[in-house]
Image (cartoon, rainbow, N blue to C red; front, side):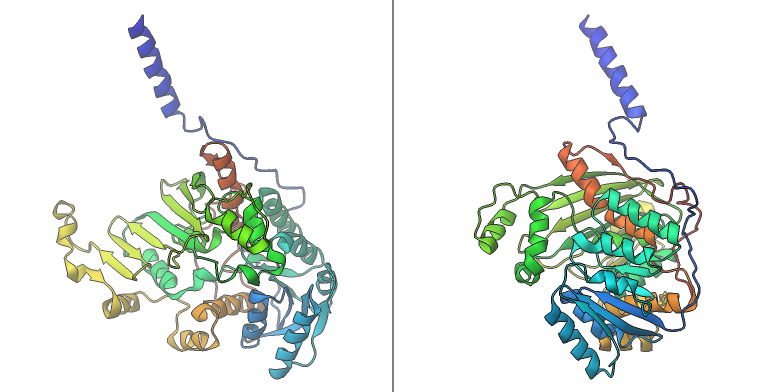
Length: 456
C-alpha cells in the first residue's frame, strides 16, 4: 500500500512538472477596444518646433527646464506646478536663457489641466509625484498632446492598461522618461550585444540600489516615503529593467513571461518613517530589499532588485551574460570575452588578456560604436549634463523623433513592461512568492518587430 501511494505521488509530481501553467497566478489581458489599433512603430506628423509644457517643477522638473533649452527644434512654452514659487523660479530661469514668452500655471492641485488644454503645447512633459502621473497623462492625450512621463509612469496594471488604451485610441505617443537606457556603458554594451560580441545573451541583471537618506526631505509632502509605506514590492523597477530589456529585445522578438519576487522584512523603512514623521509605523509595507526573477518566452532570465533603505553604494547592477561573454558595470566597468577559447578549456583559457577594463575597455567599445555616440555629440551632452549627459540624450532623442515624425526609442509598451513589475511583484509576494504571469501588453504582437533599433 505504501508503495502504491509513493508511485501515485511521483506520478502527480510528474504531471505538475510537465504543465508549466500549474501554480502560476494568471493575469488578464483585456480585449482591445473597438476602433483601436496597435501603436507599435507609431509615426505621427512631423512637428517643426516641438512646443513643450512641463508639469512638476521639483527636482526632476526644474532640471528638465534647464536641459531642454539646449535641445534643438523645441521650445518650452508652458510650465506648471502646484506651488507657485516653483513656477516663478522656473520662469525666471527661462528669462536668463532669453525665453520671455512662457505660459504659467500653478497654485492649485489641478492647474495642470490648463496646461494640457493649451493650444501652445504639443508635448506634455510630466515630472510630478508618482500618483498624479496617470491622470495628467490621460487628460493630456485626450487634449491631443503627446506625453512623456517621469519614472515610474504607472504603478498598477489598471493604470498601465489605461495609458495603453488612450495612446492607441488617440494615436499619440506615450513615452516614459527612462534616462538609464542612454547611459554610455549601457549604450555601448547594447551595440556589442547586437553585434554578437557576447554570443547569445541568456541572462541579464538590473537594479536600483540607492540609499535615499540624503533625499527623503526633498520630496513634496513626503510622498515617496509614504508610497513605500503603503506599497509592497519593487516600486521603482525601471532604471534596472529598462536597459536590459533593450538587450533582450523585449516585445521585439521576445517577451517577459513569468516572475517571482522575494523581499526582506522592513527594518530601516519604519525607522526612517518614524524619524521623518515623528509617528511610529508598525505597518510599513515595503521590505528593505526586493528581488524579482523573470523568465522570458525565449528561455532567458532576468534578475531585478530594489533597495533604497540600506547604506550600500549606488549600484544599478547592469550585467549581461552571454554564451561567449559578459558585461558588468558595477562596481567596476569591465567586459570578459571567451573569444576563440574552446569550451573544454573553460574560464582559465581566458587569461587576463581577455578581460577588458580601463583603456582596453574603451578600445573594445570603439570597435562597436553605438549609433547615438558620435564623439562631438557625447561631449556636448556631457557639457549640458543631467546624470552625466544621459538625461540630455534622452530629451534630444524624444524631440528629434517628434520633429522628424519617427517612432520613439521607447514606446507605450516599453512603459508597460518596465512598470508592471511593481504590481506583479506585490502579487507574488502576497502569495508566498508564487510565480505570476506577465501580461502581453502588445496583445499578441510581441514578435512583429525584429530587434531593438533607433529610428533616424
